[in-house]
Amino acid sequence: MQVEKSRMSRTTLTPVALVLATLAALALAGCSTAPRSAASGGAVPSAPLAARATRTHGPVALLVPLTGPYGGIGHSIEQAVKLAFSAPGAPRLDVENTGGTATGAASAAQNAIGKGAGLILGPLTMVETRAVTPIAQSAGVNVLAFTNDDSMARPGVWPLGISPDQQVGRVVSYAIESGRTRTAAILPDDQFGRLMATALRRTTTRLGAPPPRIGYYSSSFSSLNATTRNISQFDSRGAGLMARIRAARDQDSAAGRRLAAKLRSEPVPPPPFDSLLLGATGEDLAELQTFLPYYEAGPPQVQLMGPALWSSRAKAMATHEVLRGAIYAAPDPAAGLPFDQKFQATYAGAMPPSIDKVAFDAAAISVLAAHEGGFKTTVLTESRGFSGTDGPLRLLPNGHVERGLAVFRIEPDGPKVVSPAPQTLPSPAPSPNT
Image (cartoon, rainbow, N blue to C red):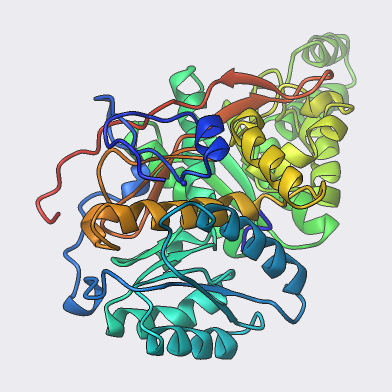
């Protein structure tokens, strides 16, 4: 989970501010001719029959948890979706409560399909999405899910949350294109860390950079320390230098003392990488800012990179010297400001969580699709993509989603954009299976 519009022209990128002013959805965006993003995962597999939408009209079903631990998030999502559906000519919206569980999500999907739903928005989490997918696909109903776990992606199911693959691909590409081609990673030993690792390997392969060194740590001080020491190869760098100094001292001679003094003035050799992807936040990140200088594996020799989660912690991170200058990829807050303002004006000043932007975009796409011939896969995956509240996005036939993110650098006066989000996405490369 990421706890994260009227008829429009197909050829003009309508500004989001204008879109929100008229409660329009999204404009289909124009394209450039740059290479395709790695998020596509290469060739697009042909969709099995069940994954090809056979229902292209009817009401739109919103599957959200209105009760349970995620009930507050679900109600906020419902509000965001209804902003888009207040546009003239919007299809009927049916809201189904999932309760935040796989069983509840499956039941909600069955109810929605029984009522004739032509498209499903949601559910919220990966677990719920996994339960809904076979039900929707067997009925020929497309799904715009809110999870950011792109392992759920498949023909007919698009996870719209900002995924680790999108974040890592963008920030690592920026680092490599800036000359930091030798990458490494220190990542949590969990699903999020594994997804980041997959994205890192995919990006280095796509850009022709050397394979990355990747280390995983568990939730303990000793594991994080050991992983940092191992990834930095400190035993063959700093520790090796200290051993040479001790050996010179042990000679107990003038020549040995001169050699020891000379060795003490030598810098520790740099680590075998010049950019380092960190999956840490909170206490783990606080510990890493101590370990990295100790093992001579931090700035300025090494460019630190991290996840979009750093955006909410950037000011606090900037108080630590080691973390200043670190970079991350995320949506540009300026892009989502019109939506935030519209949401606050409509709902008495309440600030929407980031997941509401994902939900609004899904709803806006559905309103547009209803005007453009129905909820067909060909409409949803139109190659020009959409202009969303978090920037441009494009749904691919294989279920993956491409996004245009900005790259930020952590600085004392706040995060600074060092590479702006693109206004449009690169043209997708042709695939023999599309």
